[in-house]
Length: 131
Image (cartoon, rainbow, N blue to C red):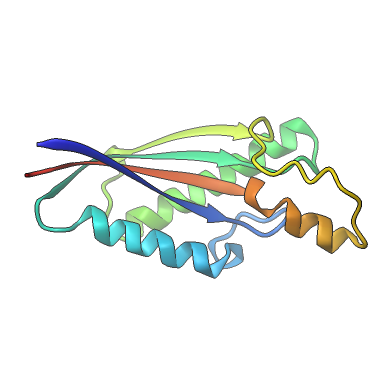
């Protein structure tokens, strides 16, 4: 069997961690990734979750928020039938920003929208596939 990895990020609204406050389009991508992991010939080996926050809060708060986001996504995956033993978690808080957003903004809402990619849980699916 060949190892195969793919990713689906779940993005969250500012200062939120509940699944109903995640961005709908990212939840649709997660559903598609779960379906892909269950395709015939695939064997799901592990799902790695890495939680992140944007830079707007204090470090400890951002770590706790990122952890809550990871727990939310883990529960969602378990509700979709992924075994808890396959889910590995990590938390980075605000240490790995993917969107710097260093410009000037007309409003706080505009700045928060720019920071959206930082408020994420990275979901890495590791499978093996039969040739």
